[in-house]
Amino acid sequence: MKKRDLLLTGVSLIGGAWLYQFWQKSTDSLPTDSAIAVDSTKATKRYEIMKTEEEWKQTLTPEQFRVLRKHGTERSFSSPLDKEYSKGAYNCAGCDLPLFTSDTKFNSRTGWPSFFAPIEGAIATTTDTSLFMKRVEVHCSRCGGHLGHVFDDGPKPTGQRYCMNGVSLKFVPA
Image (tube, rainbow, N blue to C red):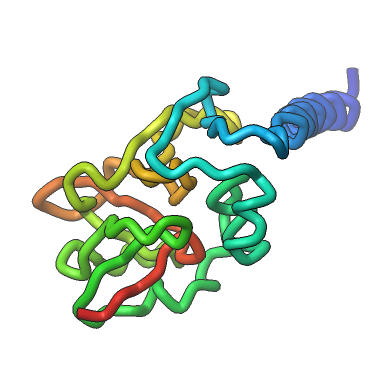
């Protein structure tokens, strides 16, 4: 087998696997008449705030809906909250639950708002195995909205980096 054929086969296999995952995720949408949230492990969970897909679409912008309800990711360096360093709180854009304070925000240089600790009880986590890796996905504990991911490369005192989508947050000045 020639190098070129081997490379084309490898690229085809990787591309096929990615397309399969993409197709599988796009067909796992919530039924419009159901108020059951679906997380990345496909398990159902009930939250304090439960809305149908149509109700979420009425209260969120299209980009907020894509990120919060469909586990999307905003483009890095696109959120003005990445450079917001005023005193205040960062609330869930879906249900207004306070999630992080400005005291825990830091510049991770990743292009997304980052924090080293959430407000106690404000978040929930699940395992995300998309994109051929295992990550910890962060959700709002009250509405189940997808916020981002948490990594173990943050600053002291926690060593964690909560890398959040700015569109999933709402900044409330102190």
